[in-house]
Image (cartoon, rainbow, N blue to C red):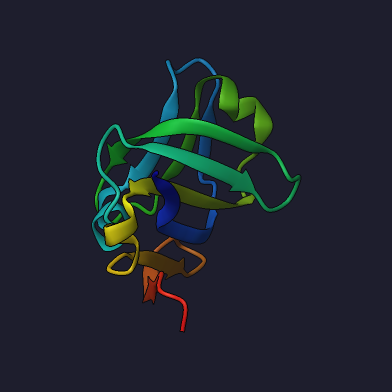
Length: 125
């Protein structure tokens, strides 16, 4: 049996652009990708803190230091520039991997720069 666990979360990033005509995905600043451990093409769930919309997409790298959080394709209709979003990815873990798993949480400032990184162990204390 596998258990789905949080891998990484970028908490309350600001949407900087939307492009409904782009072929899909979320563009994330490469610096945030590195801080969080997100990979190009990795599947993510995005939750909009302003309107409650949630959607799945995949990550494409944006320019380092740009602070870009760009919502592309049809998902662009589910949010708007300035909205705060939570970007999450998940892993499937075998029972022996659960105790060793640690989720990475990245808190950002108003310009989508990482200001704090929290490594959250999965094990129950």
